Picture: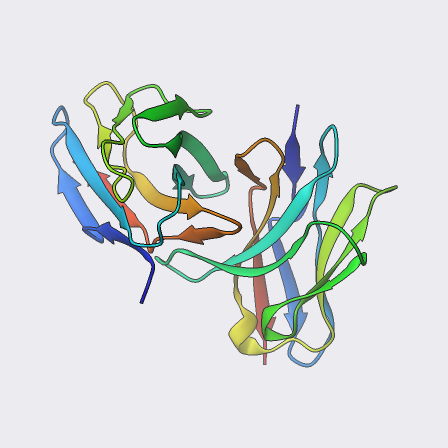
Length: 109
Length: 111
């Protein structure tokens, strides 16, 4: 079945460490997105990529980095510069319609 | 600037009663509007979308939404709520290749 896979589902890291969240899709979609979800704030766009080797900052890109070396993969790195990284992170892809992964819950202690 | 507003943090309804979850938007140009549902610790599931055509859009699980251009609204409705409809609902807008979300409305359906 085609879809988006986010791994891991739960992730714990110590404060000050960088961490990379995986997002893989086998839908052959060109565009991919990363969103952050916090209670009461909906989903906010971190980064998006409309084509391989190209990506743009979203509304809350500070403290995050991405790469898009392959069409299937759009990993998100949460750096130590992100002041409040604990959140639920959702990856999505788009081609005619949006498909979402099941999310990664990151907890920084 | 484009934006989506969901004015209610939570909507409570009794099972079997009709439900409405409100959404208003602001955009220059023609909007593409969506509704998604999210269950705890899960991704978003697509319910329905409005691109063009009939203002009343029918979607999954008996949900429908009415596009009202003059009121810039896209309220989600269902004639008879189920307890299993209890979840977090998001309205979203796509206009320039990005999907912009409202803050979400928690729907609580009580037996």
